[in-house]
Image (cartoon, rainbow, N blue to C red):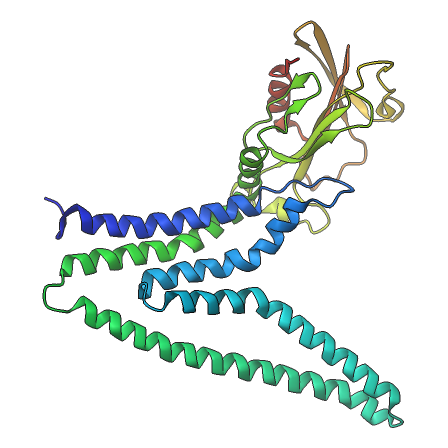
Length: 352
């Protein structure tokens, strides 16, 4: 037997839940999707970062529509977006202006006491003014919220209103209210994995090198990719790591985050030979050797144990791979990532 009010009633609750879930997933994917190109200013990266001033308050706009309906929603949305987008910039501008003003007055004052006390007084007055403004704004909006909630409560209890619809709507709102917190919790617990999936979705072409195609594991992060000045030069670089859910201890070392590097690159088509590896001249111990066949080519990988490792950390392995043609690759990280790294290399294909 279905719930009171039938499918249409349940559909509203599902729509509320799906709308908030979709918004949160889009925000996370959008935030973690930008690449980190070295020595470049990425327009998309700037759009992503500046877009947070609209997307974060946008979640409040969505909940305002769900809770209080369409009446007056446009004005509420404009107010929320204005405060969220412009508020931080206005606050920074006020603090900077107050700082310059206090410094200027102190510079022309002949009294050391005034020069010392004036900046403190201006800072206290400014913070008090900001706190008072926030308090008055919040009180006004709270009063308006009570009016909207009262109007909604009366509308739901008009003659002919379906009590089942009200119950399912409230269920949808309760479920949806947990989505932002759960989304943040999942990203916090699985940040490297979530970041990796987002970069794969936003940069599906990152593994297309000059003459080759490489597919990194789904949870491996793609940081940047590009081409060099010579025809045929290309690269893709990234990181790999485990989220907090798999262990907190690696994140407690303030001087090193548990993220590790990997890369695949190609040399130019003509007049090129493999560079001499500087690691062959180091005192790192060679612990392994793998030869991977890629079509008619071979990729020789040497494993090193870097000297001077910290005993408090998981042992690291350094892998340097040079191909018989233009390919080369590398990884620095715990040995447990080596099998996935080699599988990635085995999956490289030649393209025209």
